[in-house]
Length: 381
Ligand code: HMG
Image 1 (tube, helix red, strand yellow):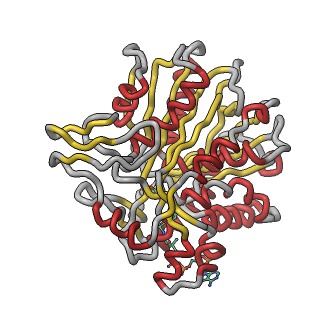
Image 2: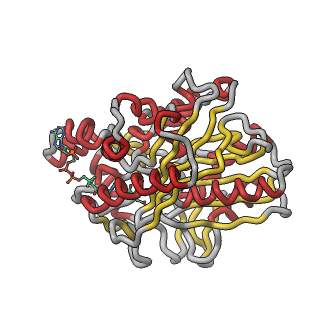
């Protein structure tokens, strides 16, 4: 059977960064609580002329620049910070990138899990039509109210994945473990631009979904624990991956050395939570920075509050090292413009654009910008 999987990954993030040391000082919190307790160093903040569309388009542009548009007939855009209740964010991206008209575009939502659902749909399309390639975009802005426990776990970013037959990076294996439970751990009602969250419940719901998805993977005939060389997690904050993994190791009666997860934390510690993009940014870090992955099996756990979890496994393709993008990702992270806590809070208070006509100040240096709302419709350039 032809291998199907992830052919390329590109990452984009917001124009600004807030260092958690600065937030800790303002809030009178020991910075070690952020660096060690939750395992985060900073988070990205979008400029007023950025959103999921501009970040998603920036990441997708990189993929298209490298591979062209041949064979792309489907664009799947996953997000939980959608900019319109009707029009798919991917249609804006389609326009910005000048993709051919013979392409179907749709938006998917189930909290942070949506990107993984998009990958699953893409794998199915390629299984039926191996000559096609599917562009998956996952982009989000994680926003909570200020002065809440969740504030340091915000962030912003996007990942674009090209899913194809005979992929350069990872062959995804057919068995997957899934787990769904109706739980109010995190949600965002239609009249709010910030999420509501029961932090403690969300942590236990994540752990339950991880263990449940593992049990389902075993029931589906998936690989044994000892056959998995590396683990990649959705990382709302990197310590979450350690907490969940500790529980799984107990569940299967295996030892767990938490330093094994550290490489996959490298980029997420800087972007903060990127919801749908988080797991793919973690995967990108692992592929960029771990030298020993040729032919190795990875397990990738995706969690979306509410809640749905899915555990995928894949085999890293020999030669993945020739497709590394560490320099590019570092440049994107290092180019972010630091914010003071006051400036960040001001941006936060301004919130998202409404349907009233507005022009947005020109701030971002990214390839695309959100120009504002005119005639009630969003304009990008
Ligand atoms: P909190 O009140 O800051 O928690 O909220 P805490 O007081 O328990 O402290 C956190 C950790 O810091 C603890 O460690 C403390 O001991 C430690 P733990 O016991 O957990 O191992 N700590 C210190 N460590 C070193 N030095 C110190 C120090 N002080 C304390 N001086 C919470 C934390 C994560 C709950 C909060 O930030 C939150 O609500 N975040 C948002 C929700 C979230 O991210 N949940 C994760 C699971 S849900 C999920 O992944 C889905 C999501 O991405 C959304 C989606 O699917 O769409 C969120």
